[in-house]
Image 1 (tube, rainbow, N blue to C red):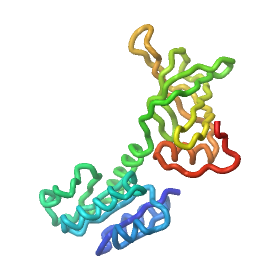
Image 2 (cartoon, helix red, strand yellow; image 1 turned 120 degrees about the vertical axis):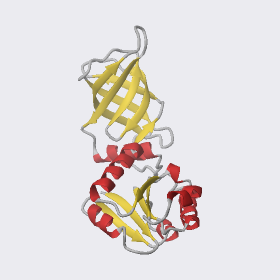
Image 3 (spheres, rainbow, N blue to C red; image 1 turned 90 degrees about the horizontal axis):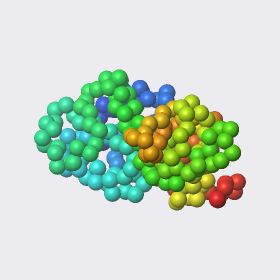
Image 4 (cartoon, rainbow, N blue to C red; image 1 turned 120 degrees about the horizontal axis):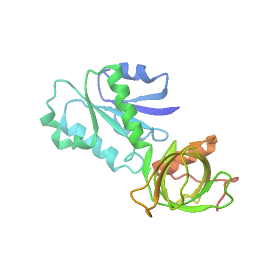
Length: 231
């Protein structure tokens, strides 16, 4: 279950939003950014309610952006209805997901879904191994991006859509070696002789694979202990 931090200096305007999400996430409320930063472990998402003072909001975002553990955590900023957007331009809100209070449940959930979709994908080029089912040979390819459910990659071998494949690669920072079962769901090529571009979904992943893949996608480096393949 995901963890969400609600940061609100005063008032209770985020309480209804917390109630919306309580069944699907672990929600924790804080009165300030500094209090949240001192909490045990960073969250998956931060919801920050501005108090209407542009300088306070700028300070809070500066703290979050400057903290090595919190800088990459997706954020949603809630602005009071009475505060003009023009007065908050100095806070560099163009890089944030922003909503005006009050908001309804569907709007909040839609924005959160969009944030999570962007956050859980990583553009990353790395050498991968691709072994089609029933083929004793392994081919080399190049990844284009990773998500928690699949991979986009290039390979000079033609692989039919729907065919099962084994994808192998090593995460450079942790040396964690992944061996993941997948199925090709998309195959394109720009012109004859060019590399084929593929999209594949992962299947039958273990809980450990899912956790380590998310660490790789988000750049979260954890110490690996016994039982892990260092190859």
